Image (cartoon, rainbow, N blue to C red; front, side, top):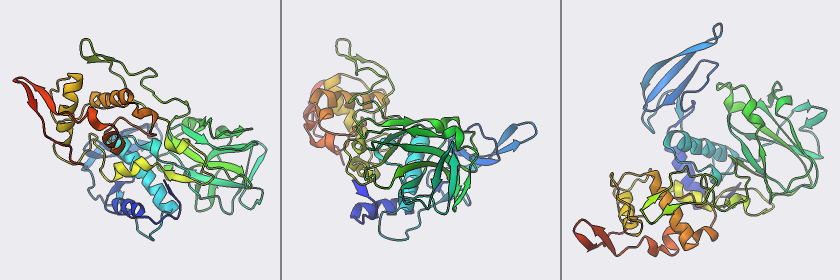
Amino acid sequence: MIKFNDNSIYVGQIKQLLHSFNLPQCPIGEKDFTHDTHYIKGNSLFFYKYDINTKTGKSTRVSSYKENDYIENITKTLEIKNNIYDAYTHEYLGNYLRYLRDYKGLNLMSLYNCFSNTSIVSTRFEVKGSVFDSNSSEYTTFAIPIKYDQKYTIAIDWHGVIELCCGYYSNDNLNEDILPNTYLKMNDARFSHPFVYDKALSVVKNYNKEKEFKLFIKIPTICKSSIVVLEGDYSRDVELLFNNESIVINREDDTYLDATLEYLSRPQLLSMNYQEPYLLADRLIEYLSDNVITHLDPVVNNIARLQKKILAEYKISYDFAGIWEERLRNFIYTYCIDKGISNKFFDLLGYLDKDVEGNDYRGFDIEYIKTEDGIKENNEWLTM
């Protein structure tokens, strides 16, 4: 797992990836905007004009949008300022992962710790009788970039008071309007039992200021616990979630239960308090380096080959060979359960990653497949 100031080869790979990708700086998808803003929806860039008098708006298509295209004043790339993993790189990576989730449909946020080692500077404010002061030697107030409409799972070990709230903070300037309504006081916290912070859900959204939207966590200086902040609700200490039920495959009539997959195993970042901030789960590097088969797989025929390998065991016919379907992900889940892989590894998301491939992979290494002409040998291998 990567931590701040690491300079491994993986850090270099992450920086080059972010440096070469034109990341949109505007919202993805049409939302309840209350200000003028650009946004991307599908293959188009829109501009939303808001009328403050009528409190209504109108969207106008500005241009087409294609992934990784440069658009002046809309996209940007990471500036490579050094060879270490710093807060700037980490926060930028978080926005790239949100883009993958919101635009590409690949949610990797359980593999990413939103925590940043940035604390407030030259700032003092009071919320419900509690003082947050950057000059205090008794506690530190971290300022963590977060997003609207999200819950956050937070893991800290401290047998005492921890305080949290949200505000707009940039260049040591703070807007205090939303602080009282987002304040939360925890009298005791256990890393093994993360709590969910959901106060940000009630904030009136201003997408022109979302880049300044911060979660403040005030914690005593003597606390040496790891701090993990995951975007999403991962508080339930379970190994399998599948519409809150077990995966169901009806092997008698070869059908399956449709469901929306959440997450398979407890996130690695919540597995242990390492007494220092680890920022990325090990498995995330596999996704960033294209070593996982998902619907975004860049290697032609990988998905088709995977479908063939699953076909024999689950007797499932695919109408669209080579096109990813969510049920394919469900079958990979089922394979993990059948083979016991889910009890050995963290962060199994239902895709074919290195752990699934390398540990008891025989379930996918099928020597023969069923065809209309009977049984024939299959010597195709996945290209990873």
